Image (cartoon, rainbow, N blue to C red; front, side, top):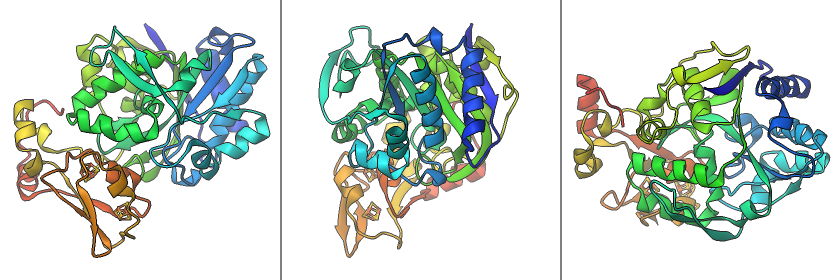
Length: 382
Ligand code: SF4
Ligand code: SF4
């Protein structure tokens, strides 16, 4: 059975001593950092930096969690690097905005920009046999993933497996959304990517998590948990349970189950002071969309009728960021506001994720509203 450590850290202001104690406890439950890292290893820490946001709005992995892991790895005699490919802007800028750059400078860890891609062949892939990912994977010996516990408008939740999407270099991300419009296809790509990159350890910062319309525009949620494990699917299964979701009904968990990976709690050896914490996170607005009610062959056909539509509100500042990152070029800026061509929109919600003004609202169509009211569901969610 795969072990996952769930440790209680209810220091919601991220007092360093409390965070370090929690991280150390989680590592001890897994056998200690020595089990994963050797002296002299070049180790990359991969936090979730999204596009770099104030650490207090809970979009990014908190810098004090990054600091605690940097120190643990350094104590082992390894060389530490930190990096991510944010959805918008460069690695250093994003690290600066979310406070991770300052921590790296104080702790002597070098930021590795994820600027350049390299094609990696992966014949074992279920979905993708090769992929262009950040070339930093060839510059280090080991990778530790430092994800943030959040809801996600496209994937339901984002944790250990979704954090791997940061290995896709910024501008390439949109193409993946375009190629894999179906949630479960996208989840399959994430699983292949996770297996290809193969971090040795997955840690999730769930001290202050995010609920609602994550990964960027939800609300902070006091959760008080640090999760850690060597198996990303087991870690995500536990994370989903803590948040009040069933991993096997979400895209990554569903595809993981089909492909023989762990997706349910009974397959996990759960250890630590937070192992029984179960909360009820607010779902993203997109959670009950048409695929809750219909089989997959109908999903594509009726997508425009039964999924939540993104729409720019009066808060739009016409910055053009959503237009620049919309995979099918469905957005124009008209009359000082973003305007969306719904015939082209693939409902990837990148615009909602990247909007700096939280101006993208997600509106249910009339038919979806009616179905939600009727509560006629079949047993599947995705
Ligand atoms: S919707 Fe957001 S990202 Fe798009 S133009 Fe308006 S403010 Fe910018
Ligand atoms: S308009 Fe928004 S949700 Fe639609 S395809 Fe573009 S980025 Fe994705």
